[in-house]
Image 1 (cartoon, rainbow, N blue to C red):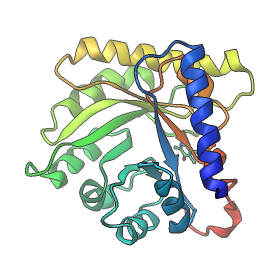
Image 2 (cartoon, protein in one colour):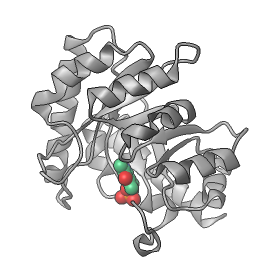
Image 3 (cartoon, rainbow, N blue to C red):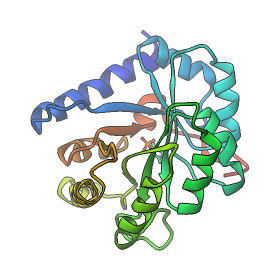
Length: 235
Ligand SMILES: *Cc1c(COP(=O)(O)O)cnc(C)c1O
């Protein structure tokens, strides 16, 4: 078995164990985060049954999408959105996890067009209130969500967050619980939107995220190994 196939098996076991432990009955999907990793790694995971892949850097992602054309892969964009790149993003991805401005949402909706199924979007929340971090503050979420819900070619699926790092299980759960509560409030605010998604949890905190209702866990390191950050010259 390849290393990636073995890692995939271990991560699936972690997800299953957490689902049992926290009595999750609805599905928890694994989103494999393949940023900076070669096409061959994605292919290895795909051969082991993985279908959802997340990428952070648009040009890198477009190259991979082209190289893997014809595979039944669901592509998720999980990085920072450049406002002049929304057309390519809306055309090439199935999901965008990191919408934090109404203007970006409107551009994505226009670029998606009415001919295709709506583009799935999550709103990124700055759940630990870190000044340096991306995401909308919780207070601004209802207004942003209302704007996004009015975009005809978007499906507002839920919320995404990257909390402040912690090694303590209880501390890890708190921001995830806040995000989960925020989603419940959005469902009341916008009953016509398909709000079924909590994109939260990474290699170090997926159990805490599943305990608090994650529906996508975004896993990079535990699947593909650590990333060599010095080899990148642009963000
Ligand atoms: C890189 C990245 C991940 C994966 O993180 P790991 O700790 O490697 O599992 C998840 N989400 C986002 C938004 C990322 O940028």
